[in-house]
Amino acid sequence: MLAAMFPLSVLDLSPIIEGGDAGLSLRNTLDLARHAERLGYTRYWVAEHHGMPGIASAATSVVIGHVAAGTSTIRVGAGGIMLPNHSPLVIAEQFGTLEALHPGRIDLGLGRAPGSDQATARAMRRNLSSDPDEFPRDVMELMDFMSDHPQQRVLAVPGIGARVPVWILGSSLFGAQLAAHLGLPFAFASHFAPAQMMDAIEIYRARFKPSEQLAAPYVMLGYNVFASDTDEEAAVLATSQQQSFVNLRTGRPGRLPPPRPGYYEDADPAARALLDGVLSCTAIGAPSTVLAKMRAFIERTGANELMITSPMYDHARRLRSYELTAGVQRQLPVATPASTA
Image 1 (cartoon, one colour):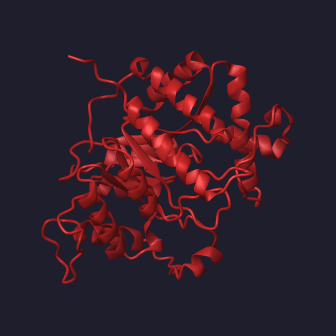
Image 2 (tube, one colour):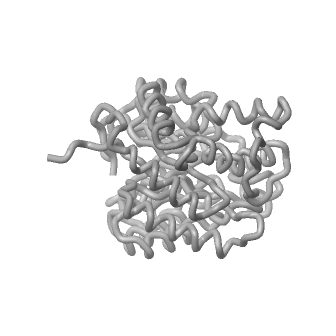
């Protein structure tokens, strides 16, 4: 019998690089998905962002269909759909369609963040409600549309009976509480907002109520990995994401820039403070360095799965990073048995 391996998955925002365009990004997304499938990654998720010059996955359901059609075994899904931007019926129809086309391979992660600024939200005709109960109501309505016996007069077709696995995404305690209450798997955005990670995990596990979808708590954590053949090479490759993150947080979003050696060392104190938070959930280095950091992170959090994001300017180096990361998978500690689709 083969020993159990710690599940690793991929989060891809289809980064648009400086000098590139959305077409190149989406071709690279499919190429990376096929690469991840060959390497044994569990799932491949793309995320909804709008009005972002450096992200090509805004039409998230369309990108999921593109990836699922070009692969055959890896699970494909949303990490996530920002549900307040959409009618639950429309998302049920979209993911019901995806499930009909690719049975047993589709995931639906749901978030309540806008995935945009307020001007973009208004352009989407989004209702900027401040009602904290609106998102939980929308999640339950969406799940009902995809159930075997929906309680609503309107039917989602495709959608009814699709039973696509639903995940709750979050970067705060709100998502942890909702996922626990509904008995759903929980994915925390620790790759860019780790501040409340440990508190969110604790609340989720302590308050979890078993459901038809999930019998025990299941935690997936976002994790940045920049792997290369040497620590020095990896450190340079990671600077593209570091520049992009600082640019975003200081109101200057743009395309993913090329690496800039010494960027972190030369950064001003404010930029370093921003990066130090993110780097707490990041492994940068050769395989041995990446393994040590990932092991320590898994042991500290008790994560059931990691969703690896590796935004690099050079596509070939990015493929290599995921290959090296997959190479350490058998040496990672397997968490307490738990499973989700």
